[in-house]
Length: 247
Image (cartoon, rainbow, N blue to C red; front, side, top):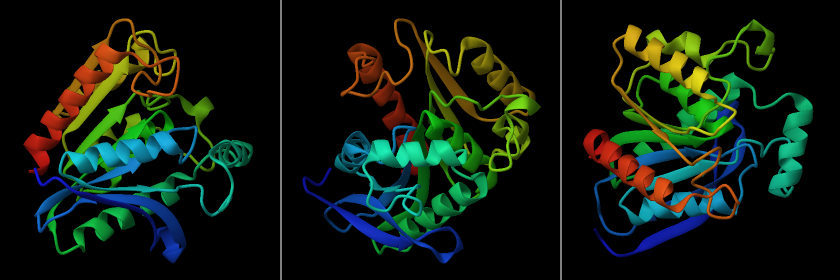
């Protein structure tokens, strides 16, 4: 791997032509490099999200993390932006799909792109990863990290999130890796089981890995939920997955 990296905050045109910010990092050198879109967790577009972007770039992936809540809170802290979005009922699904699709196109437009792009998301971003993997057929690989509310009933649907990603499984167009903690209440084991059953039913390419001794956000190094051994194993699985489908 070429030892060098460029990382910066950029602006690009997201869903509907709106200008939004994103954190972007890429290996230096001619490439060609595969791309990854990072969908931030429910705590927002924060420092840890940037660390994930940089980690992927160090491993040879041009990586972009859109600030999905930039429109509502362009200069707010991650906590304040998250509060704004919760008050409004969360990120609209159609807008998330558009922001991820345009981020993917941004990566593919770079001269060092190998024209393959994956997606990874955490928490609410895990749910959105499942969503976009069913709605953006050009994606080549997806990684859902403890995405909750994937398999929910009608009582959990809203105007902004009108369909459960679980119900879109037939349209999943790329291989999906799922990483979950067995002590996580959302998604709990039953939701993960139901999601896996749907993937099997529709003959999709997937792998699910479940970790004992881990709950929600076990990757996040800045949180008490961080679990070293489980996170290290999960990162190895991510790089194996992307190595297989993006390189």
